[in-house]
Image (cartoon, rainbow, N blue to C red):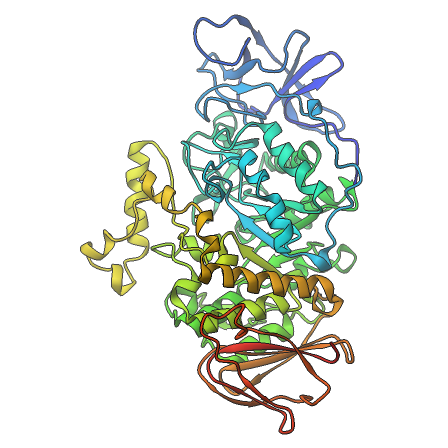
Length: 628
């Protein structure tokens, strides 16, 4: 992958004259840079300087920024800014915060790391199988270095892209990452910046892409300094579930947009990342002629060749986000398409509260989702109290990212329990099969592949007063659920601030070899191998898929054309007989979820080729090939 030359806009960056420091503080009368030598912040450290910074209008960027160059600054020095003789604060664009978000930033030289991924060609989007992981709970150590040690396992599993949940530094020692406040600084809880670089470098050497989850729609509630230097970063014209919105339209928004784009490019350039997943883009409010997300995607695409990928989490099912810029679209590589998850969850676990009220959990709904990429394409949503979605018939199927587990759909449950905890095992195996053979882009959530016993619960480490508010808010969030409506029921919800909640969410790698877990892992590996080996089972550039419901509980869909095509028949509830078009003597069974390798107590379906029918003894899935 060839990366375009880049000159960072913000932060402390190396130049031929020394380190250049640049800050946005439009309302300050004066700004002072404080610089200390060494790896700490104690009073015994040598104080290098406290210098007034010049305010300059930079060209070609007409941005009113404060800037200075310090020839004597070096890697490892600590620095902070103060406005109008106020207290020193960390740089909002600092590359590392070794002592936490309330202390000084550390100078980092991104050029010092020795990369060995020069032959890496990037991610082929049609082969994308995404594995989402949280660095802090993925391994017992919870570090970038420990996660690096698991990369051969992930390669052998058959995934092709790792999605890291946000790593931008946050208050305390544990957080999902969506409360990040230092957007340019990998969290010191996971290691140093070069540890993240080593992780990406090793992934590329093994043929794995790395995508980073970034959060631009809000900042965490503790420790962020950007709005202290410039209140213009927020606007009260819009609100989000996390409070006031980020300013993308009003006075100062040009600098906000530049800051966020600079952050995105910093991850691509300084860490060699293959793409970004933008969190909750529906909460990025922008009435500009060209939406900020489209601008950011264009900038990221130009940052390297082949172009890094940009995905979005967005519940709105907006086709224009996925269309090319030449057609007026935002040119994103994909969106998280939640309809698939919601239909499957309703079918297998019966959930009906919140957004599940919009779903019946029927085979018809699942077939429509498989055929079109998402279910809601303009119908009225009871949960949203308005129409939701647009017509996806011009969108390639692979641009819908689907899952049966992810951090939101697990962690935002009161107990953090997973679908395989609630579903019938045979039905769950059928759902996994549909996920990994669908024409969309599949996503696995860490530990899903062996049906981990570890939940993924909501955890934080805020200062005590804020932590109490978060704890109470978490309990109020589930008061409409009968099992948590009483005071006694609310106490069952894990305390986000308790370290035990975090520890409970760590994956238990030692259980993977247990028979039940090993069979789940074998199923995932077998399906992912088929997806890799057979072109017809990969992500589809077509805008539709042949899928239909067989009664109320079974779906069938076809991938590719005969004689090389594959027919998937999946029964997600109950037992029964279904008639399958085209089932005859020439079709061989590629995979059966009732194989003893996957099921402890196999109940294989009876395939009656003469009648073109399958008798399912219980839920399950079969893959039928035109030829072996």
